[in-house]
Image 1 (cartoon, helix red, strand yellow):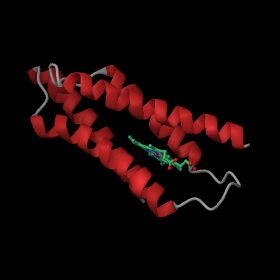
Image 2: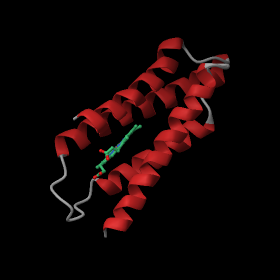
Image 3: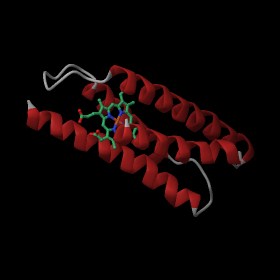
Length: 114
Ligand code: HEM
């Protein structure tokens, strides 16, 4: 059980790395929203939900998990709205683009500091 849990944590971190890495490439590039960011969010979300299940490895901190879930949903909304604006006008409004990276970092801070 512990090994499986560790594998899901690794998958969770791969999702985060994919989302944040994809975002960083665009932050120093064309500031676009890309498929790889969306995949990263889905991977981090699915693995995070799996980690939120009771694994019998100690009581999950549901306030922390719930907060992370809310932040991820906002990031998903920014990706969705930003992606739609990009399709229509060819660019992503700056607050939407920067919000994605900043809120992803907020979630890492919550994961590590809370
Ligand atoms: C982009 C969004 C997210 C980022 C950057 C992120 C980041 C992290 C990081 C760095 C860890 C490892 C630190 C640790 O083990 O304490 C972690 C663990 C965890 N995350 Fe996330 N997370 C995100 C979204 C979510 C979501 C949406 C959920 C659940 C709905 C979630 C649930 C968890 C849980 C339960 C753990 C603890 C694993 C353990 O028991 O060790 N995360 N997250």
